[in-house]
Length: 609
Image 1 (cartoon, one colour):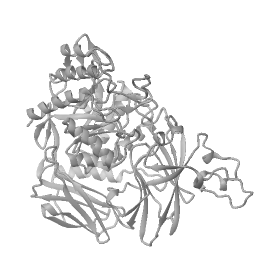
Image 2: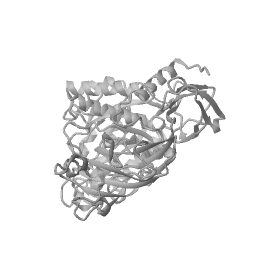
Image 3: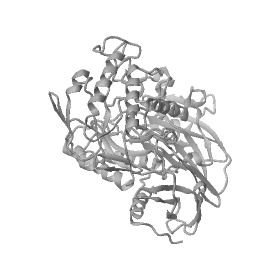
Image 4: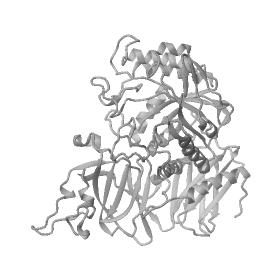
């Protein structure tokens, strides 16, 4: 079938076809299988045996001949005289997904290697591909199936998968993972961060059973310039021509059949449809069904447009104020890495209670449940990669690492209407090498997705007395000017915010991506006393009044929703290795400043009705 594509949609689809085909792969790593939760799969979550290996003996045991080296072989003593100095079967177990820091007291501060093993069964069938999928492992991982290496991955917050068809057997199998959360100067993030370096297999693990030729990826999206057009693409994992593919959106009475081209893909542009648009007030999602003769994938997708006009942000063409909050991927109540849908429902439910229509998922891509639940609840999303503080700007490998994490973040969530901003960095020091690095990232982000806004969290570059100026060479590369400021905490007092003047010389919307201060929940005193709830309450009152006067003020994501673990925060009796800037304590109790921001958002909601 020959389907006409408008020029705008042609450009959009060219971007996404670049996204699909520019996939750097190593070993048996393959392009990410989109929407793993809709696939026929075996869940490997649950109890995994683990061995702590600070000296990496399990990888470099030179006392053995090469054929017998390595924990990944899962060797057993076959004779009483055999010397085998490890045993996964008698080693302790850990719940996966999780982080080892919160699961084993001996590993609270640990950085290094831990080995994990899981047994699983497969009823292996001819004509079926078996794909081993990890939602994330922090930070470097090597993966083995039945004693053979299937691949490795670098990066702690993006998913990856391997084709293990040739490695698995009918019946019993085992997978072993070497996880290493050691920080490195040239890594992304670098050695210096302000969040806990949780190690381990931190997100869901699956073995997907797919047809030999399967639906690898798809895009279904509204034309932002024409709200009566839905366009996109569907791609097979092989260049198979003539494969019949069907797209259904039952509620819109759409059922279209297409035939794949020589590249194993189809592009489509469906005109004269009138979808109900997704918004925080009406987070409408449509059931989507994509199928071929031996495979069916379902999804729920919303349709919306996001753009800027001068100093305004327009959602579906309407001037919108982003009532936001920053969030770390920190589990509510229990502390540790958040990973489940239940965690997402709790955290994002608190954001909704606060009056938010927007969340900044900082400082790395959060798990897929967070993005999907945000979409269901009507929360727009800022999604970010961990280009944080002092990255190695002149190291090309560091750039490639950052670019791949950016690509993987966009690839996974390109169908999520909730995501409105891709962020490429946070609080980076100015300089020519930094500008070159980040401008490349911004251009790359646009080549992957032209339908969303690009931003980054900048810093105020000049302040004297009560005058504050923002000047950043990256301003020409972003759609929204965003910056962090901490008046009343790291400089000045909360009361001095009233006299502050801001100069932001760009005809673009402004989001204050961070402000805030620390308070220990339950500590009370005078509003001038640090660490009290009253101090933080006054800081929020004064800052919100100040920020509301900024020309082009279009949104704010205060730092932060919940207190979170940080090894930088050591003050005994106050911090105790927690960053206390949360509006909610790590035990879920609201601080007084929570209600100040809640009241401000109620007024903003009325103002932008």
